[in-house]
Amino acid sequence: MAGAPPLPEAAFREIYGRVPRLTVEVVLTRDREVLLTLRTIEPCRGMWHLPGGTVRFGERLAEAARRVARDELGLEVGAPRMLGVIEYPSHFEHGLDHPVGIAFGVEAGEGAVRLDGTASEHGWFRRLPSPMHEEQARFLIENGLAVTEEPS
Image 1 (cartoon, rainbow, N blue to C red):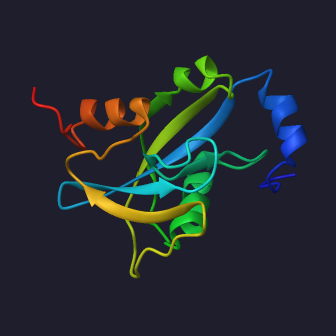
Image 2: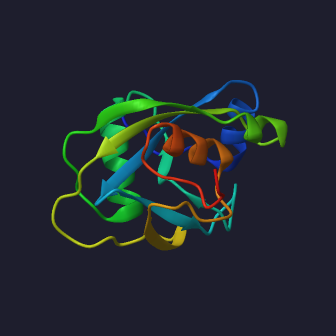
């Protein structure tokens, strides 16, 4: 059942309340800035984050990254390249779920960002905004893709 659609909420909670959830994170950069979106849905509503989502059963990781870019940003992207892993202990510690994200660097083709409703706005950042996922901020800083607002 390759690329199966998302699970109903009850099934999602039943499954991912017991096992880690594999996700992809889309890291789109230009001119030393990274694209972030402001979430309008839970979890983490009102926080800036990397666009991302759950990998569907039978879906290849690179295709999941392309799907997220297409669905959440309205962008067709070139070949995704794996950048690393982002673990989310904050989700588990706050009783949500236990996602483990594979971050993919992508390059956008032609066209402007068109958000799908999971985010209310987007921006290009060198200095990270607040509030933001701590784990994603750390990943971007450690990989030289952004800097913090705080003095070092």
